[in-house]
Length: 222
Image 1 (tube, one colour):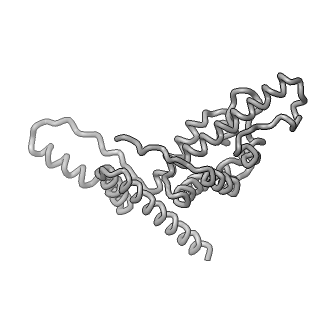
Image 2 (cartoon, rainbow, N blue to C red):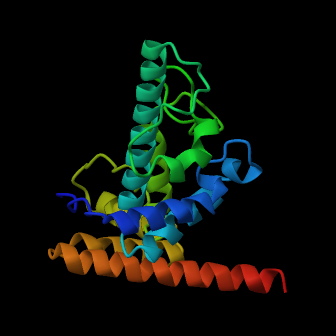
Image 3 (tube, rainbow, N blue to C red):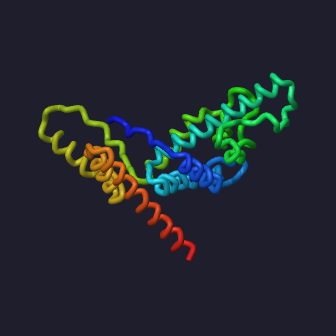
């Protein structure tokens, strides 16, 4: 199944996206306890997807691209300072990238060497950003998709009793209502051929799930 094309972000949308990320420390502040909460990070990505009318995959891709560009700009600055003999803290040598200043809040969590990416995960600070984004995207997709592992197939013996037993095992395979509904949603999504319709359905489900979770959390603290 082919993936949907990447979204084209305007400068204003990118600026607003960065502003929203700054308000969500669970996505970038490795010193925060919120950052260690994978569930909060997953919810934050899903919320951004809903707010910017896109999906979790695109949010993860956009975050990865911004971090990659930020690291590239930091390396350029370091090389130019070294070449000119300037002090490492010399602010006269700056980046010309228009989003560099608005992303300054991420710099403390970026490595100072020439190759390391921004600090990404509390479990493994030096893991590749592609792995992090893939993990977050997978977790976010699990909000609206549920899968199960079927029981191993029995070796066919050709007898009627075995056929009946196999059928019984399939019936007895435990799947609660939530899992059945999740499988139904997954099946529907896979059978929609129009990419835009599929995208709209995903966004509708994401919004509905987020709203229900927020109501449930509010009731639990009432």
